[in-house]
Length: 166
Image (tube, rainbow, N blue to C red; front, side, top):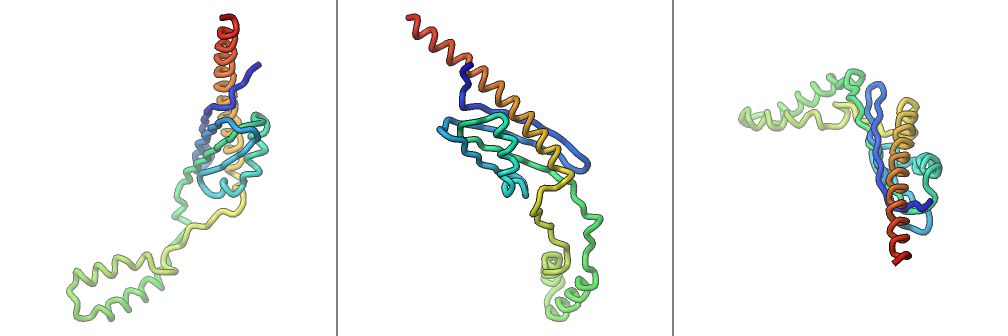
């Protein structure tokens, strides 16, 4: 069976506190060349994703987009209110003599100062709770991708046969 090297497939999945969307696109290439884009940390784990891609694809420039929307986990990330109050006192003292609008403008920037609001933690390893869902969505997207390649391959074979009989 003739398979096209170009194609597209997508799939979605969900887990507790997150949703996953995966898209796979490919164009012709002599060798398998994988590019991964998307939500951290997945672009860093191209080799893990490539293992799944290689089950379906041997050749082509393949782009995998992995998007994970995680629910905010703000309840576990409290503000440092002691430091916030200390900054506020210092700002009010420094702004002595300015009108209240100017003081309020300066105070509105306090949450951006270091140590006040917790910073998002960068993911440096595959999240155990997300990876099975991402892997399943990638596999489903690749199955759809394969179906598009087969259909395009059938169309190319038909066209070649029609040209050959003329």
